[in-house]
Image (cartoon, rainbow, N blue to C red; front, side, top):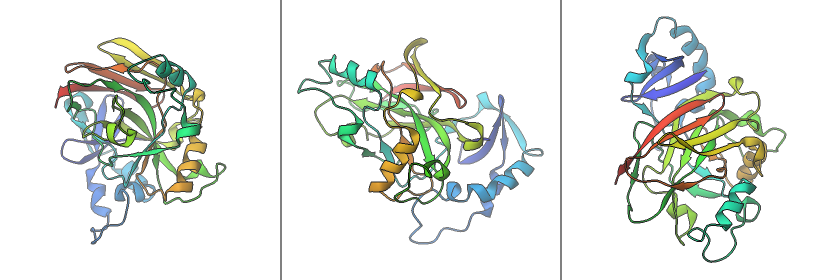
Length: 284
């Protein structure tokens, strides 16, 4: 199932070029307590809500997808985890770019580990705002793994059982000498969308074509089979450091072809079996 959030926190099922509004199921969620439990409560209850969503979609109000404003499919992750330099070809290109690696060789995820981003994602219709237009900001398209239930010290063998689904991640990156967790955590620099695809629709998350175009020109194109740490290994590794909660997102790293963007650029981000999203670069 493809599940989207649109307009003012409405919930929909994507079918072709239409969206069926099943927002009424959100009324089945428990009223929030104080303090709220960690994680996204819709994702935490997704397995329970799916049967009702299936039933409702046949009589739900239908919208044309083109008429909707798509917001992040994950509303409240407790954290967004980044996987730096998880493709060897990306490592090679960074080491050839003096703007990126002026102070020595760029290593990869096996050396760097993971990092945390701001846990406030935006959707494709929100766009990316360049807060520092005088600094180079690069596009990085990534497969985003969405955790479905609480997870700590998961084994690689069991890792995929904790996944609720997948979405496209756009990890916008300011180049500079500051730590990644600062340069990648600027407001609007974590884009998720266009929707969440449940695991039953993706047979193998480690064998998906991934690409990004800027103003119609393809800049990035690879396959998740080329990741250094697989989906399973990323989940196991992350859960050895953090407790993962429903709705937590692991951005799995970007392939080669990254490059700078400018205000007015339109990015088309695509991942096989998930779909495509268009993201506009706006002024900050």
